[in-house]
Image 1 (cartoon, rainbow, N blue to C red):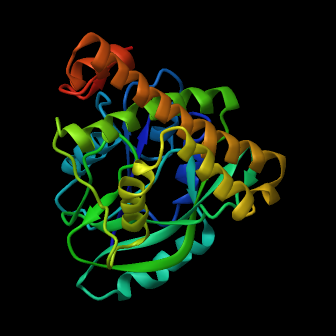
Image 2 (cartoon, one colour):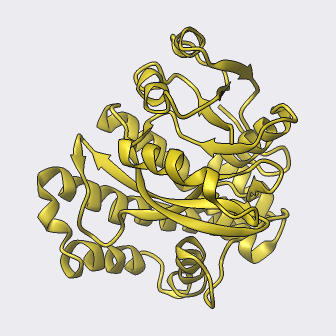
Length: 305
């Protein structure tokens, strides 16, 4: 069974060679979809034997789904990998050993994903590793249409592998905060769309019989979303850092739990508040307020620079 690896990139020269090396001996074909890199990303990818496609960026979901349509008809299995991620040797061997023996009804494979922050593995806080679907039969899977936190949806049975993908971004902390500032704006769009429904949107949220991603999305949309704005960010941080022992991850872990578990969630709440205030004070609709406050045109699904 052939495996095609799809990697979305923009200015990833720091990571791309490492990602490609991790799937060496596993992938029959590697497709890099670049959205306008100004560094050596494209050259490095081509030198490593990857096929490079260029497409303007809209959202992660749209970019990935566009890539799926560009794959050759003989594509069998598709593995999605981010440029700052690597496949562990354990997962690579597991895929090589088990994939060919799967029942024909299996259309998707869940794997584990763990994050490293400032070079340190995050082991506490109850958030990692997470189980995500990253490997699937071409033609049976696509990425749900969301602005943030998108997941792959598969039509068919799935199986779970125990190997891990490691997210180990080597960029600076300043880059990380700028990126998550953008993520926060995107997440606000999804939250507002859940209420005002100005765009078609999929959701993997499912409590009964759902997988990990579905259960977490259901809790986020039906429990977390109903807690008081601002206070819920602190409650989530307290749960991760104190109750789930996040403080055991050391200095780097503390930075991660504070920034990703509190700062980011609080930033989302305040941006959401800012949009709602603009709607009330200026008497504008939600799409206009989003564009004025966040710089996002929800109709074209592009961001203003």
